[in-house]
Each structure stands twice: as structure tokens, then as C-alpha cells.
Image 1: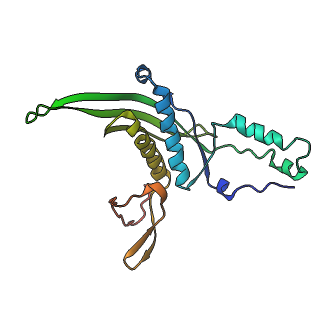
Image 2: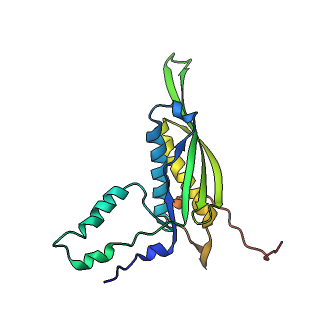
Image 3: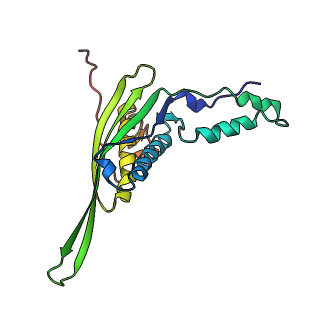
Length: 209
């Protein structure tokens, strides 16, 4: 028996590894909760893009226990073909949460004398995409986000922003077909949103420098 690998593994294999915290970010309570949510949101964005084979690095113990089940007495011998099929990744995403703050401000309305509270959250995150085989840094960036609301509302936005930037750096959005007044783009999922504006660029003559 031979195990048939998923065709998705023909895509670029990528894994989002646990992110780190800078000394400045460590001062905030529940910091690990937020940094882990950013990582999971980034992995979810890359997965739904269907451009990468996203490999899990969180539940290795559970996966190993399930594979051991194939070796137990009474299990079909064909199930042994599942063993020895783990694959390595081509790229890893690593990053550091540099800063995370929640600013609260009270405003008094002159007409009514009523006081209202406003909350604004800020986060700064640096990350890299590294080629595992050569340790070459394929892409690096730092993102700073400001949102009206608590930190929780910022976390998913940060993960989506990181995932979108990585996706567009490796797979830029391209027009793959034109049919009269319709354009078909080679991108989908959460990558594109209704009402989003894009700049359409026509490639010119190829230049060699």
C-alpha cells in the first residue's frame, strides 16, 4: 500500500511559528494570549487564500498519538501506509510583537455635561518569511495598526494584514481573464472585499538591468 499525498502539498509549504514578544510588549497583561491570536489569525488568512500548503506546528503531540493508533492490533494493515509521510516546509513565518497599547480617554460633552469614554488600540509587529533550506530572508516588514476599540478588535486585523502582505509579496493579484466588461482576478477568499478599490496596471516592455 502507498499513501497518496494531497495535491495541495504541491504548493509552497509554509508554517507560521510561535511569535515572540519584545521587552516592551511583555509589560502588558495577557500578552501571550494576544500574540498567539495574531499568529493563528495569520495562519488562517494564509490557509483560506488557497495559495499555500499551510502545515500545523501546534498539535504535534495529538497528531503523533493518532498515527500510533495505526500500529495497534486490529487496525487494517493498509493504515500503516499513513506512517512516514510527514513533510517539511519551504518557508516559515516568524515575528515579534514590538508594542501593544490600549489608550483610554474620557470626553465631556459641553451641551449635556455627559462624560463618555473612548478607547484606541495600537500595535506594532515585525515579521520575516525565511527560506528553511538556506535561511535566506525572503521577505521582511513591520506593521503598525491603530483602531478605535479594545485590543481584541485589533488582533484579527493585525493577523489579516500580515497574511495579506505576505500573500501579495509572493503572489501579487493578477488579472487572469478579460470578458467584455468583466475582469477575473487570480485571488479570492478574504483577500478581496466588496467596495475595495484596486489600481489596474498594464505591464509594459520587459526591462533587463
